[in-house]
Image 1 (cartoon, rainbow, N blue to C red):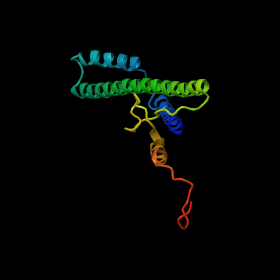
Image 2 (image 1 turned 90 degrees about the vertical axis):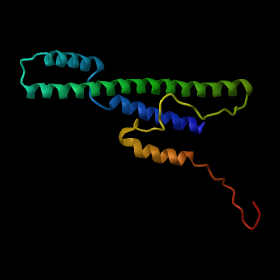
Image 3 (image 1 turned 30 degrees about the vertical axis):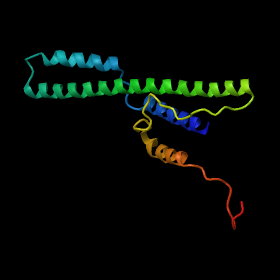
Image 4 (image 1 turned 90 degrees about the horizontal axis):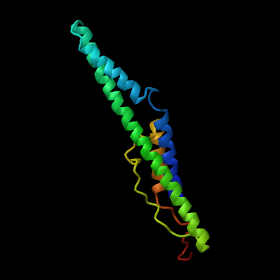
Length: 150
């Protein structure tokens, strides 16, 4: 269950970063700017310097649009993974209620979002990696051996 909690926290951090990163420009507004610039570039009356500047701006806008689309896709994947973890917890609770005892289940989830690949946590990337390393370490038993006795 601890693993599910940790995965859920990482998904929440990723969602927060995806929602707050970048600018407020939507894919639609960027697309409109791209169309306008493409029309402007068809005008042969402009100076070469102006055409070069507009072409460079057009390239930047296209790359920004690609980033917005990737962010939207990543956000959709994270939302799906959050729902999956919530459903997994509900299943655990349902099984425990029906059988009167907790059931051991696999908590090693294959997530749609690539949390391992990084990049979804923004400024928190280092902190998340440190915590992830700590959580993935096997827990040591509280038992100690002294002179061959436990």
